[in-house]
Length: 127
Image 1: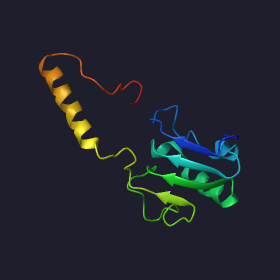
Image 2: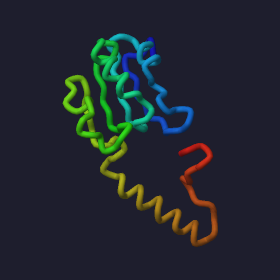
Image 3: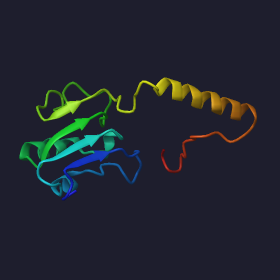
């Protein structure tokens, strides 16, 4: 963090990753760093982010996910001049539905054949 110009967070939410970027870690960031979160909202302490933006430690942030979704109206993230908000669409692309449909059809065929499915969530890992 002390050397990064940009930090992009694209992690799952688990017991080990919750609040991974908390106040202590944000204070370790290189001054002027840009922060992007497309993983899960709970990975980032939003209050600490607002403080880091105010101090200049973080120059700006792009947030596609939030601790509470939809983002509450009273959140200080709304209208913040150093934050770009997107509505949890970071993984969307023109081929998303085609790929999702292909995966569904593949898993349906495997299920009907009694075979193991692909891309199964490992509940013990949390993703």
